Image 1: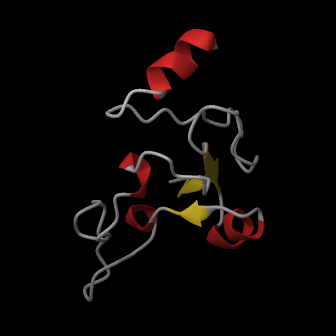
Image 2: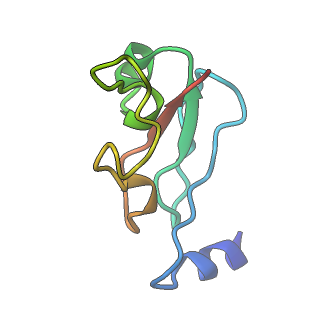
Length: 91
């Protein structure tokens, strides 16, 4: 853990711990950015305090998924110092 925290202290490194089971809150580890998790519903993820990745649920006007960070104007996964846990919807 000390080595991971040293790595996370670098300006160009963002480490996010991940939950191992679906529908479980993202882990929070002191010294690392907020964690990530996979949820089966957007509502449950939001109830648990997560930001839900728009690339996993936002669709364009034709109903096609906009499964990119750029297409959704979101880069939260890559922002160092992020304290909000992120959820990805299972597919």
